[in-house]
Length: 225
Image 1 (cartoon, rainbow, N blue to C red):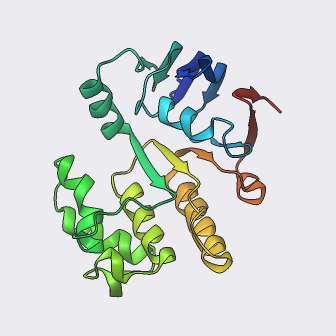
Image 2: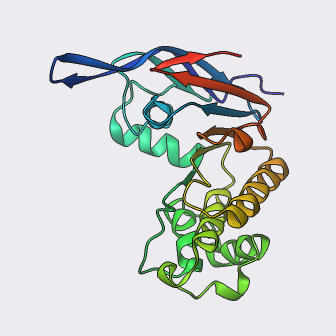
């Protein structure tokens, strides 16, 4: 069994220029997510949750500290190398869905599979759309889908590449109560079936407590419970 952490941050800080000098967004964060582990990072708006997720996913780089992905150096790679490694190992679910509006639901799910050079991406997309209950909507474009349906397409897209690590940024934040519960249940069902490590950032305490471990960010500092 591989005991190498899926993602590991050591002393990670993020500072940006401010009108009165440098502004510390994240302060010396230490965090490890094991393979298959589910971890939620909660905290109020502006506490640094999305900044932390972006750094761990290699979408940005820390001002100080080190991030490793699947045991290998990650944060010090150049942007293209980070993108390649992220594409090979990670999936994403976003609050605002980030579907391509002029592609059908099926084509949106196919997109990361095609970029990865997967065999028969259409067949895989069809299976995942069936799994999230949207086979009948596969030829529909995102603007014609409800918010809940768009996020279910987002889940199908995220899991279709069989990622080892899933990043979820406020995945139910844009949904009404009924759709929030349905998407949350589906997210954790799919994650259990896939055995994927999950790093979830949310201000929703109910959603956070679906995870095995719940941490909290306050003013850029991670509180380990």
